[in-house]
Image (cartoon, rainbow, N blue to C red; front, top):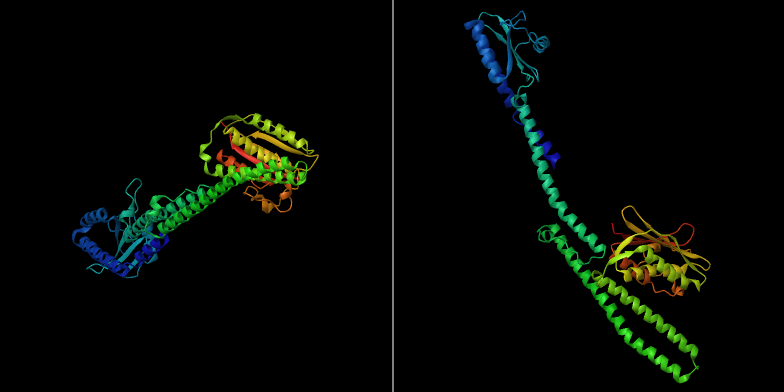
Length: 439
């Protein structure tokens, strides 16, 4: 827009009454030349000097009347620009206009003498008022050009703000939804706009509301189904105990299998309820100051005791003191889920390594590494999704349900942290947890 306005203004300035301005200037110069020679003939040098003095003051011009010998009739020395201008065209009659220099007008006195009327543009003196405002149509066009750029720039800035500001607000709302805040909506001033951006904002709000309703319905369904499954599961376990007592050792193998599957189902229901509870009641955390070194040490000892029966170890390779504002039970459960998941996949006679470090910005980093087969690069971004298991290395034979890491991720996020997974150098999987520490 600035370019269009600038080119338009410049073009109009060039085409604006050029011929008229030129003819008018020629007429004025011709009249002034005749006046100068007439005053010189009738009043001599004194009258000409008085007129030239007044003419110079009003019009900002340097004017000379040069005789046939090339001398100023008032005896003034000719400036070098005047000498060069006279040398360029010493004898040609009529007007010879030199841009940015001046005009030479040939005139003839009543006695037949030939004179040259020279008008030069005045140059501003040091410390004087600039000649920009007194230099004629070119400077006027330059002023219009500059004013057009300034005005157009301000208008363009306002238009850009008017367009980009609501788009940025829409972008922020999109980022909030992608991070899990489904209640995010665009600002009211965007939704109330009557243009296409306002229509886009209203459509975005309708989409976000629909997604929020779907996710809420899904969570309610998971919660309700899990609660409903608890009752028949409890009755099944009671019936199993009664069957054991009634038949004795007969059918022991089948009874043990039923009990194992019932326990697995009970564990699955518990994890589903935990995930739903974290997704809906995250704001109800009860936080207190927790020493991360002691918490991780306790998890490593408990997990190491259980891993020992499988020929595996859990080692705390590096530990740094740090304090977190956290819900102790929830954070303990999240970290324990990550460590137990690592124990499942690390091979026998190997270890799960845990390290705790604190960065300069007080962020605590907890790294849990196993030495198992790892996962494919495509699967890394899906490990923290509910019920996700990679088909090859991490399948149902591990005994997991694909909920442990999802629960851990949600718990870490509720504490203002983040969790990522990557394949370790050599072999295994590394899970890195970042939690904001107390300054």
